[in-house]
Length: 244
Image (cartoon, rainbow, N blue to C red; front, top):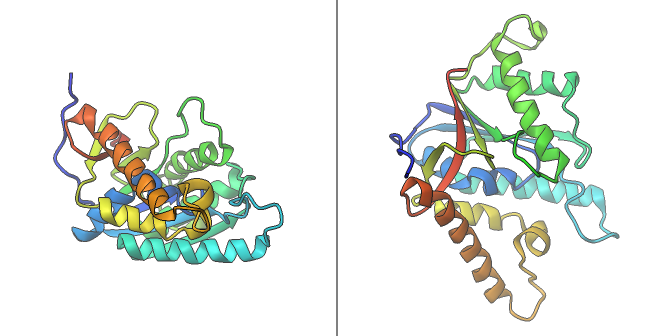
């Protein structure tokens, strides 16, 4: 049975949290682009510095961190986000302890989103520990942000209206990705340091145009698969939690 597709959501202000540069674009880039085009004030928060994001054992890690920051800023512009913030925690070593939770709580309180978006920490068989812990920080951070006796020194309490979790283990909500699809692809291509590893495009290889086309087709196929259960031609799917 096809799940019922709710009316399109257009938040007033949204905060989207990703573990690494490019995670937001992969997880919900088309949704962010559609919201921004519709007038949503979209803010992005990237938790780690992206310092493990290379296959080259001789890579200058400090230079890579700088490149990935610039790439993420360009991707945010491609999506129409109004800001992107970096916590610069060490890639691959993300923890979801009290100190990290306080930082995420502080950003939620300062941005005051009605819609919060992040990784699903409960997705089964997830390999990357940063994705699990980024999801934990979002769900634990929103509880801290809404209740006044958590981290009272980190700003006034704020309770978002809803939480959307991408890479969801059991998605029950979808956003139509048709209008934001091209912006999602453009934003992903901003992450040039990741072309060879994550995107599968070797610019120095024999046929980079074919690899580029294959990457776009992969994103198109993923969007079609996400949309099929909801009767949408292209979608990004989420677990939707509300009220919080």
